[in-house]
Image (cartoon, rainbow, N blue to C red; front, side):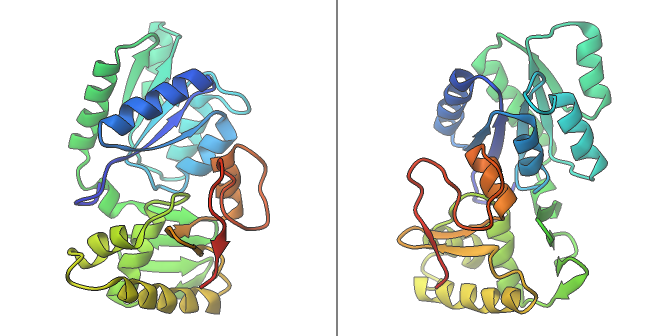
Length: 258
């Protein structure tokens, strides 16, 4: 988890009521929550590496939670995962832990206990987000090595440009406001202006454009900036991949290219 940034939680459950309840509760606890209800979408979102913890139901349409976890670990994603299931057998719990889960909660569970477990895994991995490799389609942001590539092509960024991209990719699929970028990249809203944010996003976008990755970073007019891909848009919206545009989430603002 990056300093000064709310912990980002991916909630995966096929029950709409459970998703809504967890989203409300975890948001009230100061967390940035993204929800989805099927296995394939959970895998697409999880593969970005852009979450501090994943709450993953076992019984999911399309791909079970066990298979999602197995694929994440096989792809090198180290994000902590708490399995959530109505299956309370010892073998079920052992299977999840053997596949790389960091904990296992049996439904119905206490929300207080859930929050305590989430905070516990965050405490055990305080620097994981800072070192986590982020992936948006062909774009890879290696935070530990401070390297960026599009497929096999390396992209040379200045330290400030890298910080902007790292911040946006670390919130992949969600809009980041100019003020949030100021705090994350410059450390103090008084140290720079919103115009500086626009300038550096422009620098970054030109370098991404040069290798064919210009669509990854988008301007959401009146709101801020968004790092995403067509597959990630679809996962956020619970649909099938589109060729471009902003996530189709309940009245989400349209993307621009300023």
